[in-house]
Image (cartoon, rainbow, N blue to C red; front, side, top):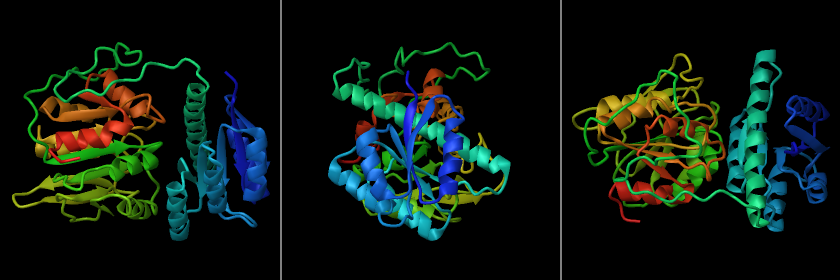
Length: 376
């Protein structure tokens, strides 16, 4: 397959060269060209038709927001990954970019240490390949090229699918689990999500029922300083209250809590209320916050009265721990491969038979509403 073609847009020559070197270190990526601002990027996008655009936000003449507005006017669907500054203003503008259709974002490499730049490069490469691959599949569909049969929606009562996209025989020491009992009506909903998550959650929470009477707690892998603005942006489009979780917050009906970007989140179920606790400490499964920490906590506190959902994301954070909820008899959902930007986290959970139901993104809000007893 041809390399994923990328257009880099940044007013800093130093940053353009740094991003180019990062991306061209992977043979599956080709930098088609660079542009110093949004005005040049518009022309080059039309001429080059890249698979992915890596976009700075603060630029002269036409900035990143202006470019995204023009992209929308032109009806272009090429995915855009934002290069965001680590600052409160940067977080706010980044969330505006997501609302205008940007696919995801990554913080700019700081140059602090070689290890930090290496981590940024790894994340950016994975994002570019993931969004580029998804975009190519979308283009293939539009041109009538053959695609896989779409997965159907399953009801909670159905068993896990017999075959989920090249199911493998697992021999990594993870336990084979059988539910101890049937599910109880969910008292808590826990969601773990990563790459491709911001727009996926925007879709789910925009369509969630205003009558949903079960609290939701979300771990979205996101850098510190961005989750408060992310929660605010979701709050504007969701019929329920959405806020960044704080120590001592009450997980209550009608509220969605987003884990802060640098803290694990756990839940303590008390007689009169469910209380949120934030924890520092080491990364778990390579992340802080970790979906695995959240899933383990709700499993211990709620048993089979849990609806747990694992969605698009690279790696396997939460893939093992969602099994503890499945074993208790809780309901576990996984986003399907077709609608996942990266099918890493859901795939691992599905292949270990820890999932009750596989759901497309467009059906996820409806599945949550149905299982939690809310009206659509």
